[in-house]
Amino acid sequence: MIYNEDFETLPREVLETLQLKRLQQVAQRVYHTVGFYKKAFDKAGVQPDDIKTLPDIKRLPFTTKQDLRDNYPFGLFAAPMSSVVRLHASSGTTGRAIVVGYTKRDIDTWSELMARCFVAAGLTKNDIIHNAYGYGLFTGGLGAHYGAEKLGASVIPMSGGNTKRQIMILQDFGPTAICCTPSYALNLAEQGKAMGVDMRSLKLRVGIFGAEPWSEKMRDEIESKLNLAALDIYGISEVMGPGVSMECMEGRSGMHVFEDHFIVEVINPETGETLPYGEEGELVFTTITKEAFPLIRYRTRDISRLIAEPCRCGRSHLRMDRVTGRSDDMLIIRGVNVFPSQIEAVLVGITGLEPHYQLIVDRAGTMDTLEVQVEVSEKAFANADEVRYLQTLEKSLAKDLKDYVGVTAKIKLVEPKSLQRAEGKASRIIDKRKM
Amino acid sequence: MKVEQISIFLENKPGALESVMRLLKDANINIRSLSLADTSDFGILRLIVNDANKALKVLNDNGLRVSRTSVVAVEVPDRPGGLHSILATLAQHGINVEYLYAFIEKSGENAVIIFRFDAPDDAVDVLLKNGFTVLPGERLYSF
Image 1 (cartoon, each protein chain N blue to C red):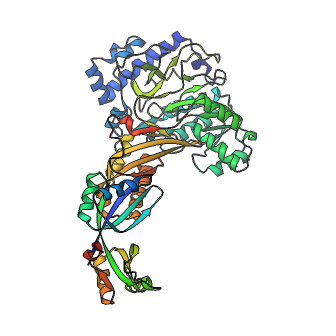
Image 2 (image 1 turned 90 degrees about the horizontal axis):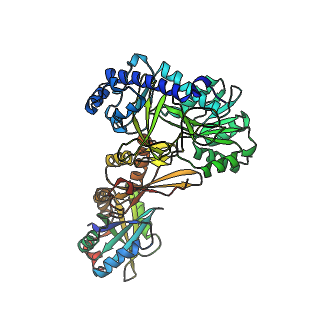
Image 3 (image 1 turned 180 degrees about the vertical axis):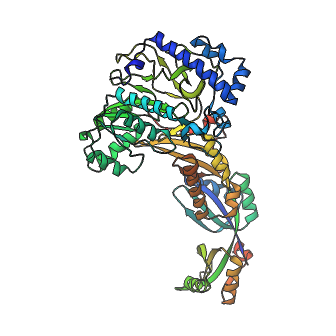
């Protein structure tokens, strides 16, 4: 099923004409309203008027996460705060977070795109949607919520956590669809089973899973444990939130990028060169309708490829494959984006710890676990030789990681010099998860 | 009247204790008393040795995380109620014990209790005033 048939099935030439017109408008607008973009365009030797064809987008400079951080909090907003009706932010220590804003029209667009996702999953206003994405600064919860309301479905604003209560509501309210991270879906299946609930006989028909990488193997597992059709959704807060692209029930192979609102490219992360359809590389998005927080050629660091072959569902929009990895060292732990540098910033802030650390990521059953191994510094140990003191240190570090980075971690103090000295950042991470 | 104790941070893994003991053996250092506090992940090995300075140097040079702490050694007759008599006095004076461990003297007549206090000077004062025998470090190192 298709929510907005006019736009989702536009013939490619018409779609591309629309994209060009919108790209030209957004290029003009950011150039004249956002100081950062004016400087970046000038430096790259390109003016908004130089965009005459769609491939001219390659002349525009990339925008990176660092640019967003440098302009924290509102430096890249292209609309006055009086027009901004909503703010969301990524987790992170102060100054390193990324803040995004939405005008009323941006919220309407986002709601429509999420409604398109729900319809692509076969949902209608007669469905009850159990929304277990986190509500709050994270875009997942409210993004899915507004889309469900736009569609006219009944939405249960569950948010994350409180698993036993979620299972009770799944039984009692009988939702027909669920939104959460794929690992949380497996967690619900397991905990439900442990509580003696037959999780296969719930009314759930469809699951819309995203916010972390997963695999076909996990899809099979979720489908068999919860007896539903599991679909992949993609979105990142910087670009909009959930609903940038979505798998359709008919194709179930790759996520349609809503190209009337975003221009997607895949580039070689080393050279920045644009790659042809089908080749794997880093996803780059340009938002062509957003008012408050437009982005020009934003480097997502997510690795995927684009699929140009037409889909049986009839949508003309390109599909992107599952995200298979990252071109930086970001980790996704239980749906939370975590950079080792954020953890390092917390470590350095705690007296008595040294920034010699290693991150061990694993999956215990269905849930991701993070262990932070930190070497005990001379200072920490000279102050007191008591177990209690060191345990307090471990606890305060765990609390700070939860507060600032938003991730639950087990802290393990280790002997000095026992951790490998990092040459590249990647060696600080041992990811044992098998997707 | 205080005794020097060496503390060593150890990860809870096979061979951690052995490697410390090998270093001490090779440096010809003799252990007078020891205790090992442990959690699921790490332990703290506390030692009283015949030559604390040498032990510290050897362990430090080999990359171990070591610290020096002052503890108080109290001698009591080795019979029922020996330890209780000390603790009763400490409790009466509101002195908190962080941890303790003990050993029996070679003669077999007395026990020595090693105490770690928050405020060791106050504790020593109270113990001496109440007639307890607080041993100087030298006595312990050369037992």
